Image (cartoon, rainbow, N blue to C red; front, side, top):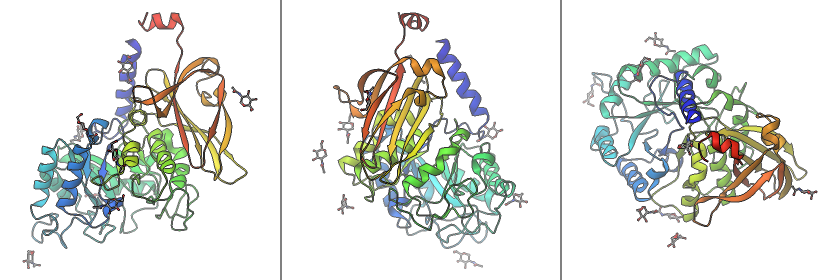
Length: 436
Ligand SMILES: *[C@@H]1O[C@H](CO)[C@@H](O)[C@H](O)[C@H]1NC(C)=O
Ligand SMILES: *[C@@H]1O[C@H](CO)[C@@H](O)[C@H](O)[C@H]1NC(C)=O
Ligand SMILES: *[C@@H]1O[C@H](CO)[C@@H](O)[C@H](O)[C@H]1NC(C)=O
Ligand SMILES: *[C@@H]1O[C@H](CO)[C@@H](O)[C@H](O)[C@H]1NC(C)=O
Ligand SMILES: *[C@@H]1O[C@H](CO)[C@@H](O)[C@H](O)[C@H]1NC(C)=O
Ligand SMILES: *[C@@H]1O[C@H](CO)[C@@H](O)[C@H](O)[C@H]1NC(C)=O
Ligand SMILES: *[C@@H]1O[C@H](CO)[C@@H](O)[C@H](O)[C@H]1NC(C)=O
Ligand SMILES: *[C@@H]1O[C@H](CO)[C@@H](O)[C@H](O)[C@H]1NC(C)=O
């Protein structure tokens, strides 16, 4: 009991260093229009997706936000009040009506704007209109704002300038009195993991994702994000994972690194590649925002996005992203990497990722897996389960036995394997936890 109480206190304490709206204590989950529909959205597209979330029981896994991305706008703002106006053809009943219908389904509703003069799709932006826009969103019943970075008038280049521009909307949202999750999308410019932790609930760390596992593309030119001058777009899954590796240390309850919206189910990757994508986004505590057509999913897609054991890693109460413990080049090209992280209740997660084109066999040494925890943890025995296998009852997470020291793993090309480990407790420890 003491351990659990201490944990809750710790989680609450880390929330103190986050944006003050009390939201996203675990990474937000939902669905967004952009990756599948782009600008081709309407009330029907969005309500159809909301109904599909319910029909597929996705709420029981935690998916709750229905997010309308770019291109919902009328050609211009209201020319007397300056308030934002929605496209009357795409949204004949207006945005408030749409939000009401989504709320009536038990879901939450999100909108999109841009900290510049125009959005990326060329619609009116919110720079200089922060207060009236936030106020209008609150009146419409908006629960979430994704806030982009196109046409920013050069108001970037130092953390201070970027901070000021994004803090203006953060304050405007707060002033509405309505809790609105604030999802910054400035593509990692000026290091939002340093300057945005107290003004936003999450921040994108890179240029836009593409539905591809590891294709090199000069439109995503940076090799790491720590000093990137052109985040770009067309960033592959493997590249975004590399970008995310060093910045996990800055995330926690209420303040997350956003690796961008999911591509699972959009058709550009194999089953194993989508498993890698979903697993690594979960371990790194990225928001899990679906980006496929959820009204028309294959069983494989549904299988991946409803792996409860993997989602539990993402939604774990202490909110600590996994760290890369090592990365090794392999002869065939690509690399193998080991990731490990702490979970609530003295439990651990670790994963092996193979970006090479060939199967690999490697000894997973607990000296590496539990490097951060020290010798006692490296040498004790663990109950280990494989989170991409089902147990006899049909639940994700199949026991692979009691393991001490380490074990050999064979892993296919572009696969990720994920395990959960809990120390095998001595009788004394069990007594201390009140279990004997
Ligand atoms: C606004 O900020 C205040 C002070 O930090 C905080 O107590 C309050 O909960 C915030 N309100 C909203 C709606 O985010
Ligand atoms: C959703 O849950 C209901 C009730 O548990 C069940 O009958 C139905 O088959 C589920 N649908 C899907 C798509 O899993
Ligand atoms: C203002 O907007 C209204 C409605 O769209 C339009 O009829 C009117 O001509 C506009 N006025 C000006 C001055 O642009
Ligand atoms: C932030 O808002 C203040 C006050 O409204 C304004 O003076 C300032 O120019 C804004 N800063 C940026 C970068 O938009
Ligand atoms: C549903 O998805 C399949 C591919 O999985 C595609 O061929 C079909 O056109 C889609 N149907 C609709 C209505 O989008
Ligand atoms: C998906 O799974 C369901 C039930 O397991 C099955 O009835 C259906 O035929 C499957 N659909 C496809 C496209 O494989
Ligand atoms: C920790 O374990 C206790 C007892 O099994 C359980 O009630 C609690 O929900 C767990 N906490 C977390 C955050 O998993
Ligand atoms: C792992 O594989 C190596 C090489 O085949 C073997 O020597 C070693 O005994 C294996 N270790 C375990 C724990 O199975």
